[in-house]
Each structure stands twice: as structure tokens, then as C-alpha cells.
Length: 345
Image (cartoon, rainbow, N blue to C red; front, side, top):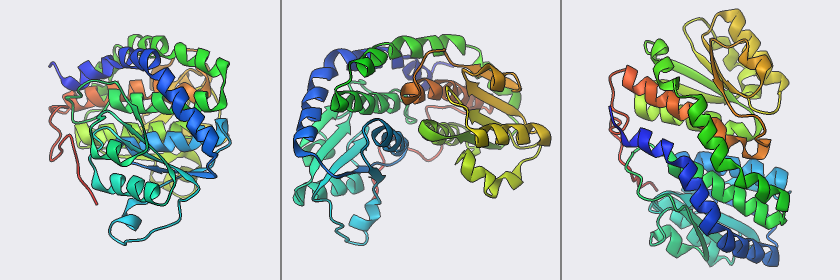
């Protein structure tokens, strides 16, 4: 079956390359403005896949830029009419369409208070872009799939480019230049993933575990599986999973572990526990030790720095969602009850 979902997930290397070619100058300009204003903290407003990109932004800006950023709670501004102080903040709204009223309202209120505001969107003429002082576009082209793929990784790329420009790191830009090729290598290394996913098609539950930068990846993979397959998938930090949810593990619950670059003790502990309980184990990693214990090993290329690993680690998860959806007799371009643009307050 030919689908927008598959076609667009395979476009991702080209989209990332285009962003590097056309987006660096304006990203440097935004970074210069941020350095000039020197905001004290950040607020990231998003929904859906964009919220998972914002979660990546939390880790990225906190670790690489020593900048504390929090996820917004949009209903505080909309339903409750609250106006928390953002006067000294950098407020970033992230949305593929730029149309969700709650995200727009957070950015609009930030600008009203004198905060520095930035829109990250695929639609430069959207309400979100109009609400913000600055804009960084995704350059992803039209996305026909309801479930986002290329716009998600483009959002990660824009955030990574912003981080590199903000800290003025030549090494970071060199690492960014390698990313399109690394994503392409990931696609090629996991050509059989969609077919392999069929082996677990009878399962109606899935747990996906990540930690650190790749907590965002775990959440995004579960969202893609839920959207396209109607499966009850849950994303967890492995640390949180050990604080109670581990009790649900048994041989009927597949576990997917996202573990590139860095070994986290609790993530490896949950992996061992899944093996003990006989849970089907799918591993996305470049680490031979953890790939070796998996029932299904989805390999990532070596040499991707941890701060950029979510851009490659999500790709096998997207392919898995594609295969899982088709194996269950569903159409990934027509998820039940979903539309491409969602308006929430």
C-alpha cells in the first residue's frame, strides 16, 4: 500500500538537508536576538507531536545552553484566564500548522507582557507566526499524512540549530551537517522494520521506554502507534517506570526500549526485568550489549552525538508504527477520528 505516511517519513533526510541550507542565517539572527535580550527562562507551548519536540527542547536547552525551560500549560491562559508572569522569558510556540488557539494564546500573552517570542511552524502565514515577534519555518513542504513524521524531525532540527547558533559552536554545526546522512543510514538499516512489526500485530498494548534526550522519542513513538494502529501505547521514563508501573510487565506486553549512545542504569534494569518476565522486547539502539538481548533489534548508526540522537532514534519507531498499522489492516493515512489540524483551547 502506498501511503503519505511512508513517503513523508522517507523524505526526512531531504527536509533536514534543506533546513541546513536555507535556515542557518535566520537561525543565527534569532540566536543573536536571544543573546541580546538574555531571557531568564523559557516557556515552550505545543500540543501533540509538537509537544514531544518541546520536550526535546527542554533537555536540549537545559543541557547544552544552561537555559531552564518549562512546558506551558495552555489551559491556564485559556480556560482559567490566568496570566502568569513571562516578562523575562523566551516564549516558544511550536506547531506544524500554527493554528491551535491555545498555543497562539500563550505566545500572544507572552508578547503582550514584553517577553521575547518565537514561532516554530511549517506555515509562515499562520496565526502563530503572526502572534510571535520572530519565526523559524520548518521548510518541510506540504505534509499529507495526518500523523506527523517529517514536520516532527524538522521541529527537532530547528531546535538543534537554534541551540548551536545560541552557543556559537562550530563543532555543533559540524555535527548537524552529518545528520541528514545519518537519518538516511537509519532508514536503510531498518528496511525490514515494517515487515517485522507484523510479528506482534496481535498485541493491543505497548510500552515504550526512554530516558534523557530520548524521553521525547519514547513519547513520540507511542503517539505514532496510537494514531495509526489504535493500540494502547504508553511512553515512560525508565526511572518513572520503576516507581510502580513495572508491575504491569508480563509476557503479553511488548516493551520497546530506546537507548542510543548512553547507558542508563534504570533503563538497562527495566530491560533485564522485561526479559525475566518474558515480555517481547524491541530495542532501538547503537549499543551492542542491549541489542544483543532483544527479540527485535533495530539498529542506529554509530557516531551520532547524544544531543542529536532523537532525530535518528525516532525513525525506526515511525517505521514500526507504519508496519504495525498495515499488519492490523488499517490505513496509516486515515486514523480513526483524527484530522490534520486540531483546534483546542
